Length: 381
Ligand SMILES: Cc1cc2nc3c(=O)[nH]c(=O)nc-3n(C[C@H](O)[C@H](O)[C@H](O)COP(=O)(O)OP(=O)(O)OC[C@H]3O[C@@H](n4cnc5c(N)ncnc54)[C@H](O)[C@@H]3O)c2cc1C
Image (cartoon, rainbow, N blue to C red; front, side):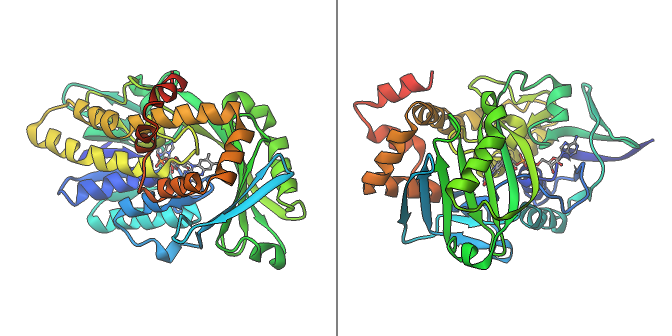
């Protein structure tokens, strides 16, 4: 049976969907948020919320922050390493079930209807409305939003994002002995040189460590051995590993449509993951914040045209993804050089810290390379 009519149906209650729900509800829009999993749900993710991302949430994440990172220990191929500290916080470490739950609860408090355990199986877009079918219901709205992650059913049915570039991350929660855990207090680990174009990480979560490895899809067969290499190089082989899982990291290319009539995509569904670091939460949240006013205006004008959203993403997010793609290439070809440059040049280390804090962007760094920024552009082709 067809149920209540909503202005907007959002598929997926991750950071993108929950933020959009909140932003729309506080503008007076009726929103139904459908989530495939039982909430709160675990997501394979390192759970690093950069200060840049935290600042754009408009929400205090202290209640779910397990550790505040101010330093990084970088290892290269398991034998060279350095540790550097910054005088301000760089990344807040969270568990995704707790963090996402905070965002979903904020959306609910603003008036969003949330139904979990209810996957969108199929969508049908007509000239006046959109139908979203789940296993037992057909729900109807004026606009549908795909915030349903890297394997978006909404994108598939809307014919969007075909051929998006994919990376893959593998992540597990690892319990280690107390004396090993304290070594990672306020410190995170990055392990370079094990996987071409990728890296491993050790993120402290107060009572355990989130350890993982990620890289381009062509390296997927090396992820498991890369993961073991990270454990070895960080002297964490004796830890007890649980929830070892992999997940896609989708990266949009310029010009790929992320909207069509009455439908748009956010976050991972739109391929907005940083190709250098794998950070996706910041752009998931920002894409929702860019989409909300556009959707609101379209509803008021009774227009199905959401192109303004894609323009906003192209203006704000794509220059960053494109510049990051160039740096990712440099890192793929010369990981040892990148390691050496950050180790030996404090100015570069501080620029990386400012990037994490949102005080600098890839584009602003590129502009400072004048007159060599053209070389940088060549890397992004
Ligand atoms: C191993 C790994 C480590 C990472 N580490 C970090 C990190 O430290 N920091 C960072 O910023 N980013 C990280 N990322 C990226 C980050 O996890 C994503 O970019 C982020 O979760 C994107 O948010 P989202 O809301 O777009 O999608 P998601 O968080 O994936 O949420 C999508 C939601 O949609 C639901 N869903 C799926 N299909 C349907 C359907 N058909 N109907 C209804 N609901 C559906 C899913 O269950 C899920 O809850 C990592 C990714 C990986 C793979």
